[in-house]
Image (tube, rainbow, N blue to C red; front, side, top):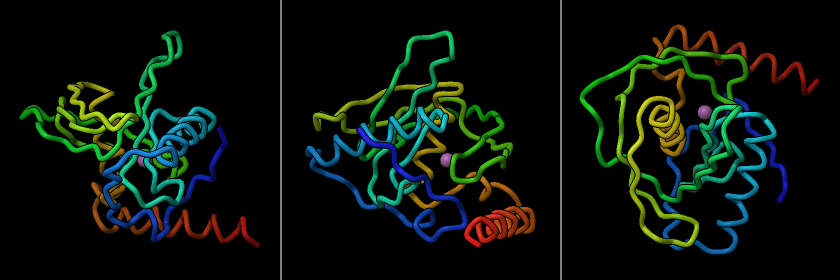
Length: 171
Ligand code: NI
C-alpha cells in the first residue's frame, strides 16, 4: 500500500464529475487500499478518489469511533437510491479543505447501492454519521464540496483564503 497526496481546494479536479468504474480490476482494488491508508494517516473518516487526483467513482469510509474496531468500507460506483424525508444538520470537515467546518443539512438516513471490491453489487442502509459521511463522499464524485452548501459569498471567502495559503506554501 502507498500513501497518496491529498488535493487541497481550490483545484479543478475537485470540481469534476467523475467517471464510473464499471469493471473492478486489480488497479481499482490497489487504489482503494491506497485511499484507505491515506485516509487513516490523515486522519479522516472518508475519502473519495478525486481527492487523490483520480477522477473515478471510488470511495472509502470508516466511521468507527476510536474505541471501536476499524470498520473500513470500500465502495465502487456508489449511488444513493433512497433518502429519508427527515433532514438533520451536522458539522462537516473535509481533508481537501483543511480547518474548514460547515453545517450541512442532509437526509438523516440513506440507502446506497454500490459494487464491492470484487465487483459484486451491494446495498447498505446507513443513518447518522455514516449516512452523512457517505453523502459527503458521493458529493465529491459529482464535483460537489461541503462549502457549496454555503452562500456564494461565504464560499468565495473560504476558497480565496485556501488559495492564498496554498500559494504561500509553494513560494
Ligand atoms: Ni471531503
